[in-house]
Image 1 (spheres, rainbow over the protein chains, first blue to last red):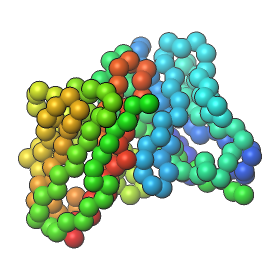
Image 2: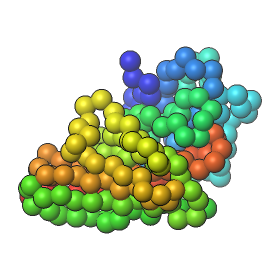
Image 3: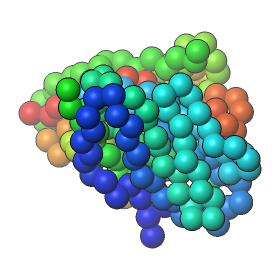
Amino acid sequence: AQKITQTQPGMFVQEKEAVTLDCTYDTSDPSYGLFWYKQPSSGEMIFLIYQGSYDQQNATEGRYSLNFQKARKSANLVISASQLGDSAMYFCAMREGNNAGNMLTFGGGTRLMVKP
Amino acid sequence: GAVVSQHPSWVICKSGTSVKIECRSLDFQATTMFWYRQFPKQSLMLMATSNEGSKATYEQGVEKDKFLINHASLTLSTLTVTSAHPEDSSFYICSAPQGLYNSPLHFGNGTRLTVT
């Protein structure tokens, strides 16, 4: 079974509007972390936001927020006030366990395109 | 913030030759580094985990004799693609964890390999 699922291969959003990128995950480990990365066309991976499995509140970082629904095993990324520079691939990832040396498993990604 | 440097950023080589890719953690020590491969329009797939002072751990289906990994020091890991073939053409990206379990993986900028 897929550990990280991103069901939206591509999304369009109008500039200045908010957009939600979906991510569901599957793990039996009670301790895990969820990450979102942005990958522009140049290829670098830019870390956006982190949510721990024991965190009580949804993570926020500037225009990025994470809608964490633990019972549903979903960790959707919300980008507010979209900008043209937000056009990129977005990857959801999970680290199982509480060891920083554990690998990240990535979802298939969502290509976000911001329309002017 | 933590920085991972990867070199070269792109390389073109002839079929049958070998290519070495370097990954350095610039301001922190990394006993573990991860090597991912990304084919066009696809997600990042873990190839192997590089361990300082011991052998690398390869994911299923990744040929260890073809993709040689050497973790020479706490700040340097290298991936050598031996006897490269056109099907090895891909985007290779290294990453290193830093410190705490809630720290993101820090990625290099990737290497785009084209085998002709």
